[in-house]
Image 1 (cartoon, rainbow, N blue to C red):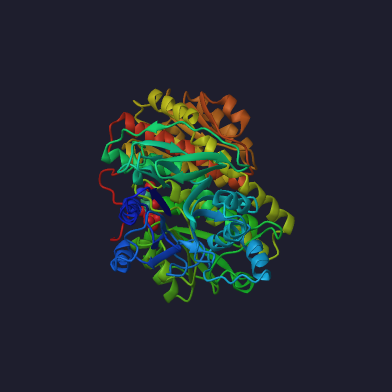
Image 2 (cartoon, rainbow, N blue to C red):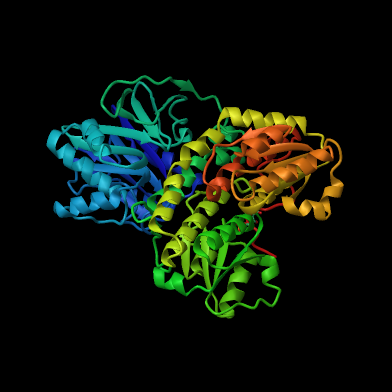
Length: 613
Ligand code: M6R
């Protein structure tokens, strides 16, 4: 995920601190990086695709060593491939201003068209460059950088953390937040900004987090905060007392917890700039998803492992339901060793966070040798899965460090929904209105995901985990599109807390597993309103009749009322319900593991990326 740093000092050079700040943010993953610093007569930009060492090689000439203000960025490509041209900072071509940005400018195509009509020349494929030009034009007029940024942001739809450096008579550095985090801090000599507090800790532990809609003007020794209308605002100063180990987790106790909390952002990052709201359709970057290609598809074969397989099972419900295309799903490890009979024009959809899972790769290669077309949903640009795919939907989850996959799952499900909508629209199965309705609902989901990573839901999940911590085993039940969510809840619990948990299709219980239910056995039931909700309610009754202790997660009020314990989630369309229902299950597993003193980020016997058989 992208990283931002910035600094302005009275008398000390800022280039080294900027580069060191970027080094601290390296752990977030990036594919290019750059800095922009203020000189006497303008702003100088240096940026490079690749690692920080390559940028440092460029900076070795010492030309920028004396600068007293500047910004820096590590980029994880979203709009446009990793390249020198697409790396941040971006400028407006005037030589007086440069800007870095995390997030997405959703209406950038429209803004870019307006700017092209006005004679602006673009030098990158990014959405960020649009913002550079908008701020640059205002700055040219007024010379007031904060006012210029506010005016530009008034035209922007999307979510962003942005930092700008400009020179006219004096060095000006401003930043603003609407979504992704930004934090500022000052010493007597200088002031600093960063997208992650870790980059500020070497300078100060007294920091102030910007809130959505805040703009900060940095000066040597201090900063001023205001809102987008220019009214002053006050935010508390917090003292960061983390040690180095805690700091690398951004203040969370574990990477897994941090990654659970990143889910509102990564959902937006994976979805929002691909939505064609008016057309009720989706636009993917890169080829292979055009109407003709998708109209030809006779069958889809999903291959994946673990959590990615669960996302693939959800994809199957979505693609069959929204696009009317038959879908088979298989464990990649099974597919590769059976004799799969693929009908002509089978699209083999591999799903993988790492893009390096050995079984998934082998399944893709087998599929290609059988004449099928491998495509993928993957999180790591440049990974083997991506390189060996005919078409790719990149998820923008950023690096996932905890072995237990959380945010990657949510982005895989988002990508699957986007694919199902694209296929449905391409094949005429989904109308403009139906597509629009789904995408509108997806756009409304971010605050609901945020409400599920709140202290309140966390505390509720911790409470239920404490009540059930001595249980010998758990069932996780669901039906329809929430059946794979039940499987995922069980997988999370067993992999990090080493408690036996069985995920089951609720309707299958009566064919055997119900014999295991005994008084007090915890049974987690996932249910949201939809075509199978009443069936799941009957399953709840069956469990209760045998003395099982039902814990309901979902938005079906009747199920929540029937259950012994409940974690209500906000209502949404049935197709999107897995994106919300999975979050309490992640927190539930997390708290179980915590109570049992397990090594949450590195569970025993497991590797983050399974690159061998
Ligand atoms: O990198 P991949 O998505 O291909 O990995 C697949 C599985 O190994 C992975 O999802 C695994 O199941 C996770 N540890 C689950 O949390």
